[in-house]
Each structure stands twice: as C-alpha cells, then as structure tokens.
Length: 145
Image 1 (cartoon, rainbow, N blue to C red):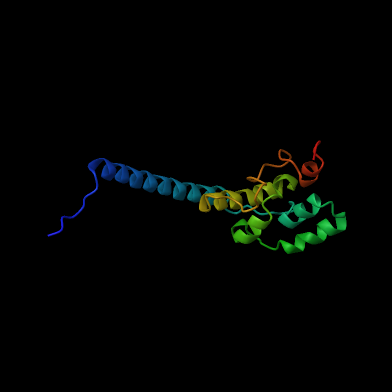
Image 2: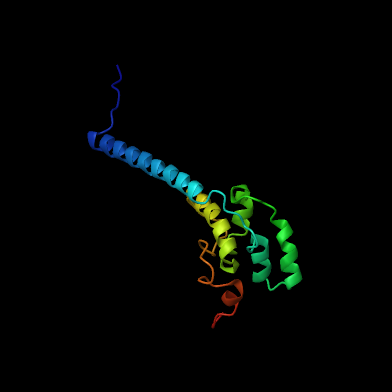
C-alpha cells in the first residue's frame, strides 16, 4: 500500500498564507477598479489633446496634422479606449493638456491594475504626468548619445 504524501506543515502554512495574501490583493485590486470607475464616471475629452494628437506633437507634426490626428480618437468615453491603442500610445501622456490627461488617466490606471506588467513599450517605462518625463526628442539629444 502506498502512503499518501502530505506537505510538510510549514509548507502548508506558507501556501495558505500565500493564497490568503493573493486573495487580499485581488480584493484590493477590484476595490481600486471600482473607485477609479466611480471617480471618473462621465469625464469627457472635450477640447483636450487626444492620444494621436499627442503623438503628432511628439513627432513635431504641423498644427494641421495634429488637428487632423484628432479624428483617429473618436472614443466618446475613456472606457472605450482599447488596451491595444493605449499600449501603443502609452508614451504620449507628457504631451497631453489637463483635459486630455484627466480623460485618459483613469484608462491608464485601469490598464495598470489589469496588467501588472504595464505597457509593452519596452524601455519607455510607465506613463508620466505631463511635462515631467523626457520626450523622445530629448532622449535622442542627450550628451554622449
């Protein structure tokens, strides 16, 4: 007759503690998602800078090109911005004005809460508030680069 292997009591306790902490983290994550959704419910972009407009600014596009880029961001609600779009344009926040930042901020926060790894734009790091992070142009012109 084969004897059933039972985990060492210390390992079982550690595993139970790990599971408990994971459940607590998940409950906190869901609570934060509900808070973000409630706090930013009804926020509209208005005349704020959109993601593609911010990309145009970063790429030194003409004023006409930046204005035309707005048509690429037709979402009326921040909740409707896709993960793919947000991930692809995650480095544009420094070029947002206050209205654009307020509109996209909750979507970026939910993206971070849903995807622990953050945006896949390797080497660019997490999005930064307007005017606090380096621009692509400043990264290209660093001394010694």
